[in-house]
Amino acid sequence: QVQLVESGGGLVQAGGSLRLSCAASGSTFGINIMAWYRQAPGKQRELVAGVSSGGTTNYADSVKDRFTISRDNAKNIVWLQMNSLKPEDTAVYYCNAERNLYGMVYWGQGTQVTVSS
Image (cartoon, rainbow, N blue to C red; front, side, top):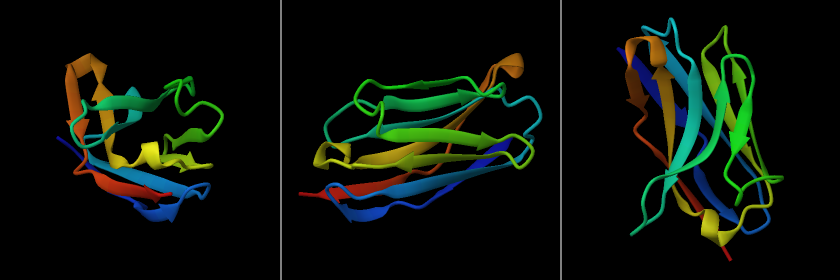
């Protein structure tokens, strides 16, 4: 099993910044993808950004040029730097990890991000 613990959420004004962190522990061998998803009230969970073990990143169009995902493979930590935050970024943000070789997907408990206008 892999445990994911997120931190860094909170309340921020529009235009501000937050940095989310997610630390993986347990059976972390073979984690390929680490990613951040978010879910706003009444909406489906959506991918925000992902990063492979090789460093390849991908972003939702809505956050490109504002958010940056990064990862420390040795420490099994992934970060999401969020700049120029907008009220529409308000959501619960979830850390995600995938061990494709074993067909396993793991989720964190979620951290609330609220952006006030």
